Length: 161
Image (tube, rainbow, N blue to C red; front, side, top):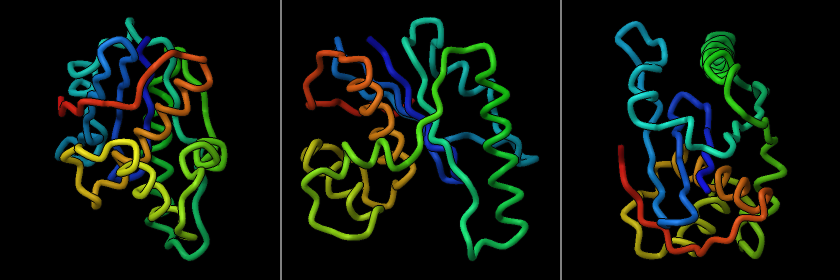
């Protein structure tokens, strides 16, 4: 089974988990020079016909963000939603995937909880702590594995595509 998780932030990522090979293929969301998401690069990296389900984080702007930041974020989110219109996908709120991902974490800060959980699950990965978008996309895809009752082991081999 293949499940894709997408963190749609400006430094977001796409992660495809394959429960049969234990591969976690990932790609930082690519942008063209005009700052539009490069969907040709995404289509070249992932075979969406083989994917069981795509989970996209359902997000909203946050207080304290400026108008330009909210507009840019909304643009990116809308582009991704448009790309997914003909693909099986589910919108998942952060609280839902974080409930599973953050179980047993010590920190009180969500980003730190995500990193702590990621390192606990993948102690030997070469993923840097600064790759928050990748870490969140991984947790979103892993949530999808649980939602589909997939049989998998948390020994993922990370491959950048």
